[in-house]
Image (cartoon, rainbow, N blue to C red; front, side):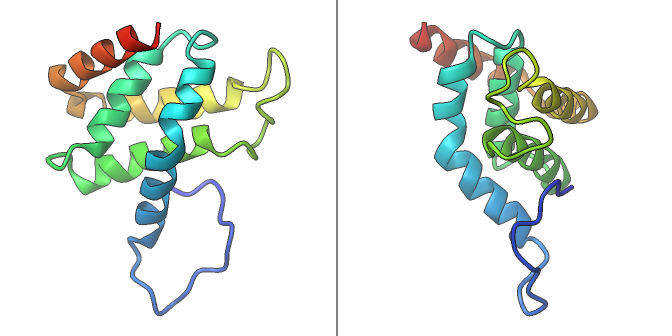
Length: 124
């Protein structure tokens, strides 16, 4: 599930490279962006739980790929509706995230939710 392809695919590299690229991007920028926008979005806890689910080594690769693609879409500022547009900027991000989280919701465990709650308490 790739929304943007920033470079031409290399046929000599493995197919899971987009997942690895998304994972690097999400690990690098997700928490920083979430801290900036947590007050603007109403489902920060579920979003953060999805992040912990995606980082969990026991999460199936298919689920991880769906979540990583959606989280990477959230992190990347260049998307369908630019994030800086007041009132509209995060609507496309939210739609993508809600669809992704809903499709893999069974894999978001209570331990992911607990980690999310604990981290959100430290952000306040």
